[in-house]
Image 1: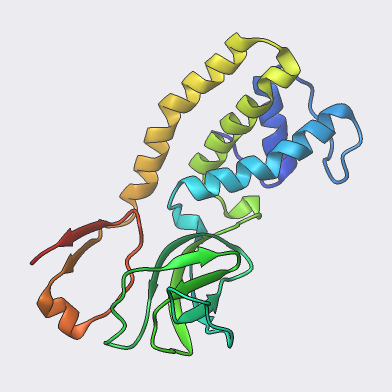
Image 2: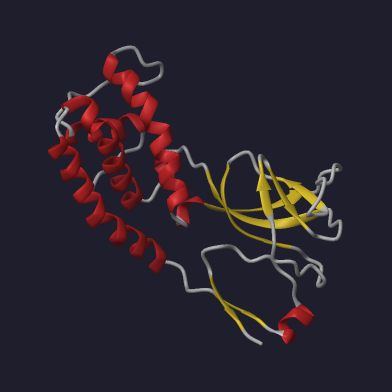
Length: 211
């Protein structure tokens, strides 16, 4: 299992997979290898963060209503955190805040929240500090990064296939282990629940709609 604390460590482990020598930095990139790795590193990191509901990347925040309302469809606009990558769920404090629809546009989320000054947000953050990452996430990111640059360096499709095969094996296990660290969420939607609680439910959660 890879244990690294800096981005350059992840980059060099990815280069190991494609038979390339280690580099010293990508800040700023100078050599051809440094330029290539700098171009791919953040793209792969953000892609991997968005792919899963990683426990280390989950955040909670109260987000603030903006003075300018959406032109149509929704009544309220709230600004997303600077480190926002993926929405997990939003919820209001008002018992009448029951609309389960929302839309994300740019750095804003649009909802019908009856003018609430703020709403609760659960989201995946753009975590750049490698020391905060789960080791399984790190290992998987190394493989994704290696695959994204493999053909550029090797011009060998078999290397790309080998890395893709490794990813196909490692991905389900990595997501399964991460998911085992949180209990399943079962949300029921009934006339009794609607009478006492309003919420906006995240895509990706198991929702049991009852009559």
